[in-house]
Image (cartoon, rainbow, N blue to C red; front, side):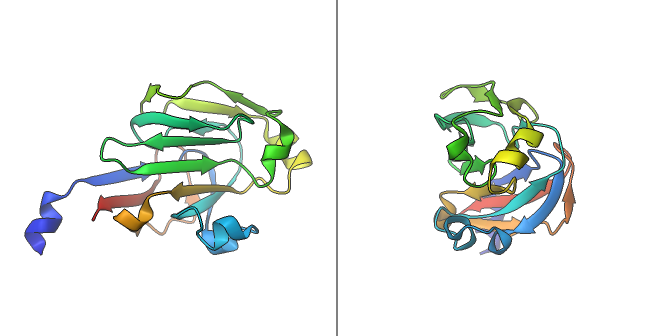
Length: 160
């Protein structure tokens, strides 16, 4: 058992924005709170933009610019969904700086967000960070309550 754990690579996922960390069950949307899209956590952003929490490849950018998917080298797939019911904003308040298939580096800015606009026009700014293939992964949460972009370790993911 120990040899299996020591032989597996651990993916460190860092905060993609500044804010307060909350559990998914606190997200007022059943798609996220009931973990229909995968395990993870959420951040109530304070300010700033969305930065890459890992090295990887962009695999999805929502047409409405409110969500981005990233695949790490180990196959872990991560979804950052900015706010709730932000699809109705039709891209307003978001400036995406990357496109699908772009290789990205941890800390790289991905999406500029006008938080004032989003706060005024969407249901919520709470931002779920999900491992969409979490059934194939073991996730270790780090237990922090607040996060600083690029500094705070949110999760460690190990492929099963």
